[in-house]
Image 1: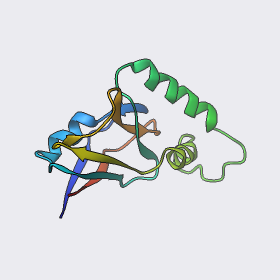
Image 2: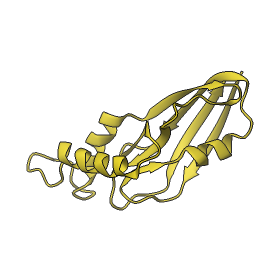
Image 3: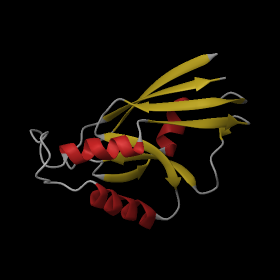
Length: 136
């Protein structure tokens, strides 16, 4: 059986943001066992699972991704939407647009230090829309 939910996140500043609580709140009661698949409907932001306790990890990830795909490169052709647009597309490909999480005992089976991240790569972002599918 499958159930599908949508979640529109508020505008977050550029960076890596834990959204685990928002996701869980929308899902409500989960099945005993299954899989949660989350997909983001955008090409300049991504989803990831990573460290949920130490905020310096999120800071360092942001700086590392800026190093991997810097703004204002002379070879970028896609620049109409601003200097952060093409780097945001590059970063979203590196991170990916979805995550899947096992459901065990009616809960998300994340590791002790794992959380779900919205990876926001735009300086002037918009609300981000997620499609969440629970398969049981």
